[in-house]
Length: 321
Image (cartoon, rainbow, N blue to C red; front, side, top):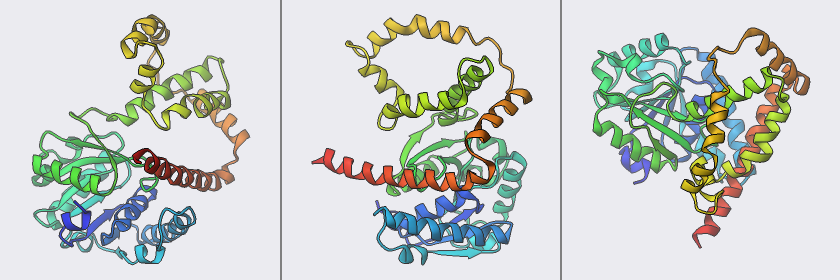
C-alpha cells in the first residue's frame, strides 16, 4: 500500500531536526507525505531545511529524484510540539540518544498527541521500554532505527517494547515497506538491537588490533573497505560464508569454527576504550583527515552513497528482467 493511502492524507511529524531527522524528512517527503519538522531549537529547524534543500539537489544530480521543488513543498517547519503532531498519523522521534530526553519528550507527547498517533524512535540502542514505561502511550511507541543518513541507506530496525501493540507494529511495518525501507524485525528488546551489536563486535576487534599494535587505523579500514565491504555491500555474513565453502554454511562452520573460537578466546578483557587508545586513534585519523575537513568528507560520503544507490537501482532492475 502506498504511504499516502495508508495514512489517509494525514501528515507525519519529524521530531528532532538533526542529521537523522533531516534524513527522515526526505524519506517521507519523497513518498508524497506532508511533513512537519520540529525541534526544541528553532535554529535547528532552519538548518535542517537548508540541509534538506542541498541534499535534494544532490539527489537530483544522481538521477534519484526528478523534482526537488515538488518534494520540498511537502515540508514545513513546526515551532511547537503540539503543532507538529496535530492531526498527524505518525511521528518519527530523533532527539539525542539520552534516556532522560526521550522520556521527557514522551511525557510531553502524551499530553498533546492525537489518540491514534503512532510514534517511532530513531534510538540507536536504547530500547523503547526504557523511556515509555508506565506511560499511556507506550502501546503506540516502538523503535524505528535507521542507518545514518536515513534517506541514503534503506535498512530500518523495528523493535517493539513488551507494551507495543500488534496494531502499531503492523502499521509501522506497512509504512516502512511502503517507503521502500528494508525492514528488519527485531523479535525482542536487546540493547544495541541487531545493527549496532554487529557493528560493535567489529569495532571492538578493530580498536583492540590498534591497541595491540597489529595494524594501523588505515590498514584496518582498508581491510573492511577493500575486502569485507565488497561482499557485504550486496550480501550479509551468513550468505557470505554459505558461498565460501563447497558444501555451504555447515561445511564452512565445520572447517573454521575452531579458528573463530581461538580468535574469540584471545579477547578476554571487556574494558572500555581507554583514553590513551582514543588519543592514539584520534591522532591517526586526524593525520589522514583534518578536523576542518570532516564536513566535506561527510558530503563526499553522501555523494558516494547516492552513486551507489543509483547503481543499485539499475542492478535490481536488471536482476528483475
